[in-house]
Length: 326
Image (cartoon, rainbow, N blue to C red):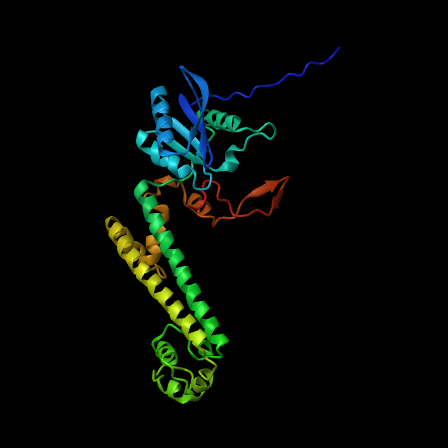
């Protein structure tokens, strides 16, 4: 007698009356709705503004209140921009928490699975700040990138000097300093006499002697090196101007948090720039983090806890509810 295979259907207690699960991709979004009084249905929308607006109107017409989607790169952002004003409770969830059962995987099944987990109350949304804070994040993160570019340009300048046999970094602690800049200007202008170049360095805090400086600035500085240094210094100047422009805009947007900034600046080792970046990342409302441990875990500063059979296994810091960098 042949045995008939029986398939078990997983069911959950439903805590969300009407919900929608979104499987987000670069060009399209697969949406599955389910809930009390409506039929379960799956539709595919394009990631364009017009198509996403149609998605929002469809969900509003069905009375959907909750929407869940994966934090897939930056592709969730256009969806958030359109759905956020619609009054939905939106969850951006870590992809590891909603991984579908392997085998026969499709976009429709993914969106249906997300919808089922959403309605069962089994999803925990990542911390997604409001629009103003997200904009502030863009500014502070871009500023950080520019500072890194600026540092890279200075390192590139040092390599050019090394190629020209000028050992400036050996006698000057900072090639951005006044004395070193004076020497660089003179070299670019055509001065090659080591003694005259060393005579330009008159700062009393210089540790290197005039003889050491003269030996360090004696090199083979060609027209090619001059061209490269001019180009790099122009790039650094442009970056500095852009950083200054960003600082003014960040300062303007940080005015509502002046009290919090002054309070945090009282911490030893913390300056205004660090405070601005901190507030841009986590905001001032700590209610979104139940405990201090939760905040450190979100920031990736807490070690994971992976124990099995009484043995603790090595694990990377957990960022369980943290959206991907954007």
